[in-house]
Length: 259
Image 1 (cartoon, helix red, strand yellow):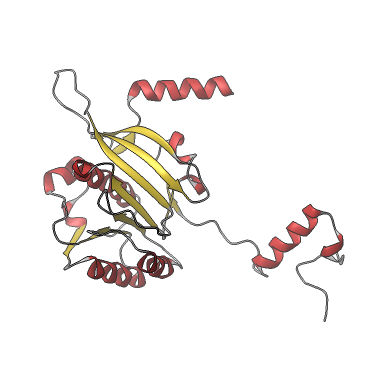
Image 2: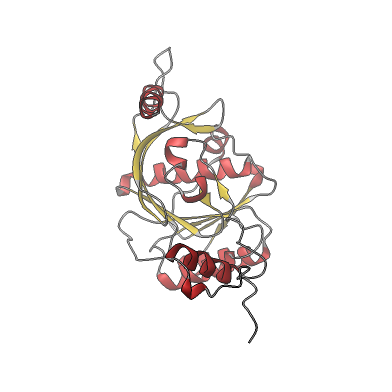
């Protein structure tokens, strides 16, 4: 057997230092094409949160699970998911598919407009149950025709359907895949991130009327990343997430103090 082409030094990798052996192993696993390109991500545009996510954003392709903290927060969880969808659609062409099991909260035109989400770019499929939702999402993943896919589930995401979705998402041009489940439907699965969302008191403008909606967002699980808790606000004018102004100033000051 000839020398390993990944070993350009001609030395036996097993005889090198631990660092050299690790580098040789990585080169061998990467194959002749070199290291794989990092997966595409959707940045949230908030350094305080993007720093917790591997690659600086939500990975495109694998499912991300979103759940309300309490049953009464179901609409808030949907609003947060739609805000993420709007952020993705602002960066690309195409439409979003929402496949919903029966009796799930559904978006309406006025709420979508407040997020900068053109209702003409939304496809809504009312499915007969979670199994139909999974089939619709899997078919859409294989078709690679839509940049955003959302499943609204009644019973949560089990391991096997989650794995099928993850396999179907592998390859070029993966979409943003969000799975919304009820607060109590906690099933073990392979979601890349798991979010808990609660409604928070909305900000008031200078006239005292309610202005931008707010969410209390908890990143409970993040594969290869870190969890955290944040109070988030939707900027209706800029159509983006932001930290409320006092929190943003505190985060900036904390960053300067560490520099």
